[in-house]
Amino acid sequence: MSSNVRLLTLHEHQHFQNAVIDLLNDEWPQSKTIRMRRLERSCNEFPLSYILVNNDDQLIGYCYIDRLLDDEQSVIIESVCVQRMSRGT
Image (cartoon, rainbow, N blue to C red; front, side, top):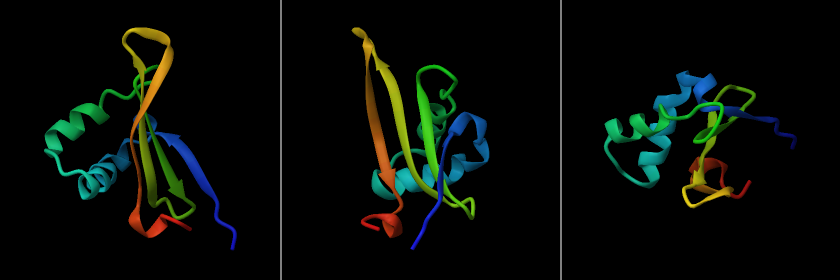
């Protein structure tokens, strides 16, 4: 079975924000307002929010990447989450 997916920046595809919030809150419940504030910080530099979507434009996964404050050469990848139905496939 072949599956095509795309890796996109969330700030260029903001219509996925609510789906990302639902995905993250399914795994780690938190205020939608707090989630939205963090997602809105995504830009062309750090911090970056990436989404993984399938050919049907359905959200598969999300991750957040930011630069470490004390080391400009290092980044931290956090909030890595994949839809439950897509895990292990």
